[in-house]
Image (tube, rainbow, N blue to C red; front, side):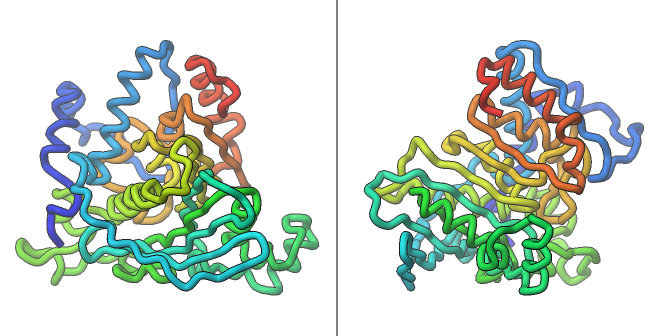
Length: 347
């Protein structure tokens, strides 16, 4: 793997130089942290204070993801094919290169019978079996309908595709793209990206190394970084489509797709609204190797990452999981934050 794809020691140097006092604090004296710790957010008191803090945290995310300095915008080489014509929308297959040899794959949904330019919604799917092809199964959907969690069998069995269909029927274009290792996104395997648990001696030498090795971490190359790069390039691509309204570009996803949602929205101002589902909380910060990276959450966490959306609109959902306390831990601070910035209605 080439260090030139993403990641740069210069990015790390920039982060360290921004806060020399923190850089030289011996972190070995601190209590050990893991993803199941407590990650609160303290809102800034003034817009000016937040502007300074936001710049620092945004740069920290970019450095941790290996996208600072920004990677070279190589030619995307997008291919759109295999159109499927439905009653109120069309679906097309898409693949393109986010970096030479690294492909983004997915489906492009377009509304029918409407004139553009159209709002665009990026839709990273998250940790669902088979990714964008997720099928909950006949037994589960019947149980969900009985419990009131779903109303319709087809939409309940294929909820990720149903989300895209409904948005297209409402007049949005949607790009539903694969996480690495899912569906058609098999440039890197699912087990490597999402289930890595044991070092590979043959991929951890000075001259031959791969993801999760000391060499890749020192170069700020990670699964999270590669997926962030894919999201950035997905945004680049949809912005190149003539029928897309550049002022109305949103992103939404659940679980790992929620992580991709707030990471991209935090670092790229072209996103005008975001809805990270079941992922923003002060508790568990991301249970997959693809949601974590060296330096990412030092002194910060998912609530503050979501706060970087402000003053742009931010929506969230909670469930009976690590997000179940969001109404009392995280949301009050986000409401205070958005109010301080003069847009209390945007969260």
